[in-house]
Length: 314
Image 1: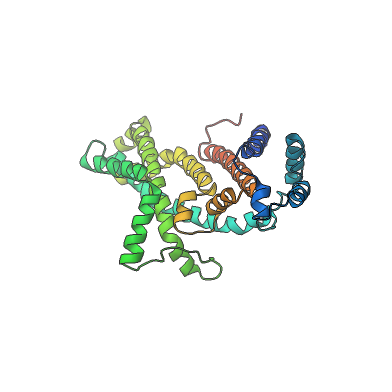
Image 2: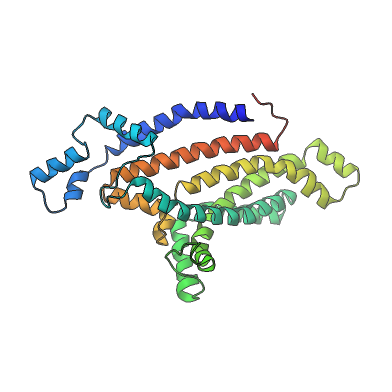
């Protein structure tokens, strides 16, 4: 297993290098001048030239890239042009927020999606299967921003059950933190639940038609034991890998959801950075989330091998 992970990490290095190149050079294509945004109304040419020299923006692009990636390898992702804070410090502040939102959304998705997929597969061709598929299709089709606004209107404005927006750190007040995160986590979790339901249903349908399931039924085992022990155990192997990848997507930031519910996570940070032409922050966020997604892919492959010992370590 360690050799497999080591090989995957080596293969991931060129991918990460390519990502860093794309992140750096594509952001240069964005409209606007960060120095003009930083200078504000004071457009004194001497000040503008001083700022360009300070942030080394007059260097050739390839020199700027190698300076940036060289510093990134030492943990220095630059300094925010707007707040003058190190980008790494900003990321460390926002990571717990996005991580909590991702965990809660994933729990909701698993609690809803996996049982729905099992029930739908077991009752294939019945009205239960039809209803589950309709609900899953609705979950995939409804935009997160619309569902979020509707939930704020109903749950917060009309009923007053949960806060409409904001964030409370979990370490300060765990209960209030969960209350503020519950609606945005549900908005994200419903879409993921629909995806998990479809994958679970597909995996269960394949397993329920396998020979060992028919053998277990022929031995007189109860239907519950056949489904839960023999079928589900094998069907969850691909589902677990899907869950891992979905978690990586969540860590990349739920931009619209965080904007709607005013959650100070990665998504809101990157939107604010783009509007403010804070390119160092944009580069740092995109690079870190891309690396996180690559690592989650490697973890997904490793989990697949753990759950499916028949796979040889090649």
